Amino acid sequence: MYIPKSFTINKEEVIYDFIEKNSFATLFSLHNGEPYATHLPLLLNKEEGYLEGHFARQNQQWKDIVGQNVLVIFQGPHCYISPSWYETDQAVPTWNYVAIHVYGELEIIEEEKEVFDSLADMVNKYEKPDSSYHLENVDENYIKGMSKGIVGFQININKIEGKAKLSQNHPEGRQELIIKQLENSVDQNNIHIAQLMKKNLTNG
Picture 1 (tube, helix red, strand yellow):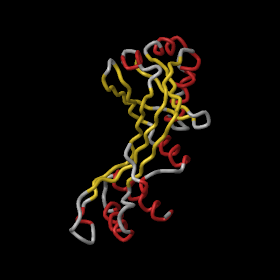
Picture 2 (picture 1 turned 180 degrees about the horizontal axis):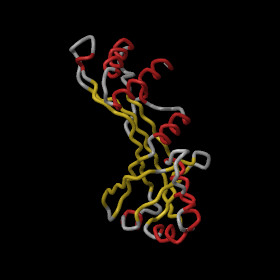
Picture 3 (picture 1 turned 30 degrees about the vertical axis):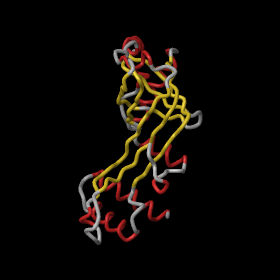
Picture 4 (picture 1 turned 60 degrees about the vertical axis):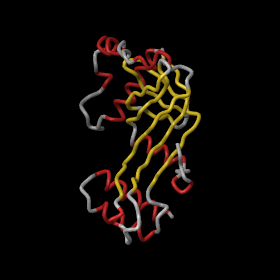
């Protein structure tokens, strides 16, 4: 990914936090010699350095993906930035956004218990603490039947790139004008970018 120095996210904890909050990812690999992508939620194990998830078994991507260096993209908030918000009209439009690219080698998880544990971890992440749904309460035979339709996997991470394009290449006064416009929006992407820009300004 092209990342100008001023847009680079250097702090590992910031990258990990972003992945955990924006965990619906796009997984790219080569399948039958062509680029192929699957959109799916992934869980991060930052202590051991891997991502985990599962394919639908009918998704052919998993059949030739083992051993490839795959790319996973976690896309965050993004929005259009209008030059009409600036102190001058001698400017061009741009787009602010945050994205994380994770590279790694994928391995298929065959162990039934590991696959179930991965599913349970995912359910626990997304269900609310007071939810009435608990995977362990579902009939074991039903779970086994459903599990036949998925393929569990783990991506062992070998490189991570983080990019936050938040108008850092513009003067601070202009950044404040942009933030003001974004905060007046009802669009959640705009509001989130404004929050990130304010945090970036505060942190220098």
